Image (cartoon, rainbow, N blue to C red; front, side):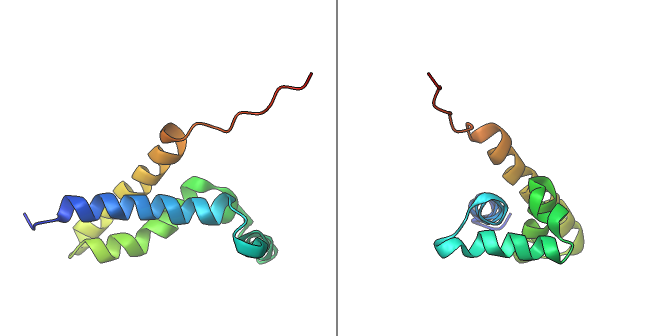
Amino acid sequence: MEEGVTFRFVLGGLAVWRVTHLLHLEHGPWGVLARARVAAERLGLGNLIRCFYCLSLWVAFPVAWWLASNWPERGVAWLALSAGAILIEVRGLQPPTRPQQD
C-alpha cells in the first residue's frame, strides 16, 4: 500500500466536509456565498445547494479523482468521501443551542 494514503484520505474527507458546509450554509465574506446560493436557485440548482447530501457528492467527485488512481478506486473513494462528510455533519456536529425565551 502506498505510504500516506490514509492521511490523504482523512484530509480529503475533511476538505469535502468543509467545502460542502461552506457552500451549503455559510454566508462567506461580504455575503458572497449567500448571494451565490440565491443565484444558484435562480438557475434551477436550488435543490443541489439546499441538500447537504447531494452537494457532498458533487464536492467529493474531484477529491476522489485526485486521491485514487483508477476508476474502481475513484468510485469507492467518491462515495466514501461523501459519506465521511455526511457523518461529520450529522453525527460530529452538535446543532447550535438556541437561547430560551423568558
